Length: 155
Image 1 (cartoon, rainbow, N blue to C red):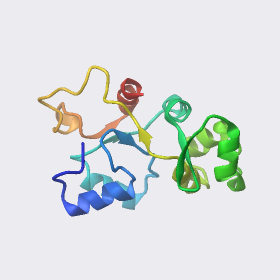
Image 2: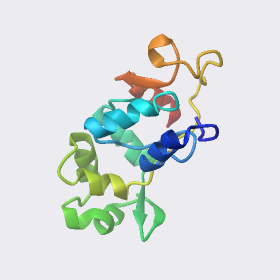
Image 3: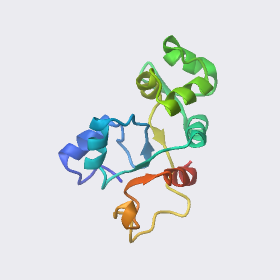
Image 4: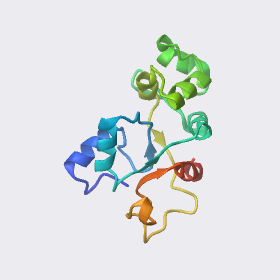
């Protein structure tokens, strides 16, 4: 969802997660603090645990790096090398591995990645249940492994 009509606290959390637009996606390291933050913004976002294949598809197809505060497409490994080479992340495979395994340089690798701009899902969201929690048949909240199906429709 967008950020209009959202409480200031939830809006701030969404900014911290770099979710400033509708259909944006980012990776988040799960710890106690981020789980609490996710709980506060649950009505406005959907989240889950992506598979390695989903992470791969996102980075290869929708991946953009941040170099000198500019959005640069990840066309070749030179872009990654320049952005996060100093942390031992040299190529696309290293970047995917670092993100998927939440390695020691996850923070730098994730910050290098620009938030993914996804399309609206093929087949759409259902109008009646868009704002309801996933467990109640809606779209918002934690969908666990089911996030992979949604991301596949949105890439």
